[in-house]
Picture 1 (cartoon, one colour):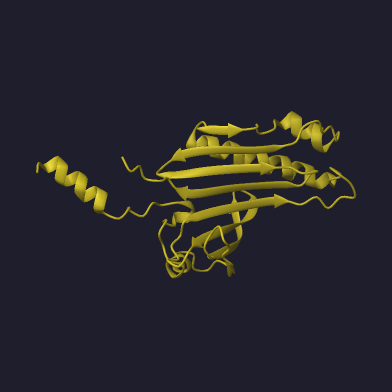
Picture 2 (cartoon, helix red, strand yellow; picture 1 turned 135 degrees about the vertical axis):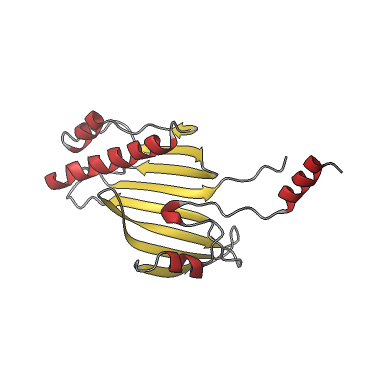
Length: 194
């Protein structure tokens, strides 16, 4: 065998190198390794029971994370019995506590608009143009019409996907009735078998 063939066989048999993701964590870390890396953070542990479609998941929830000035939480997912970090999901939400649909208190309008704009723009700055996009992030003018003038004519449900740095980054924005659900998830990019 020549050197190239040997190298290809070696690379194909070598377990994947741990890919760095959010917060300096690496996919494939154990829960203990993650807790050590996040020492000093408030972490809650829970188990989602398995069902016929997927194995049991261990989830570590990291409270009070912040991206810029926006507070949220991170869910670190360890599926199956091997308990290795497979997905990181960041959750940012602003729940509608008004009396009606889009009846958002005035002091909540700007934080909701900023949350959507800041995080959406930061993803583009970091990862470039998404490789896939369903729906579109509302502009500032559209968000003002929604929150100030309650001019809602479309359902806001956006999903954007990037492939960068050996991982898949997904952003979801859903705005049912004024509430903002914004999430970003990171997972390792699947390795090609070819």
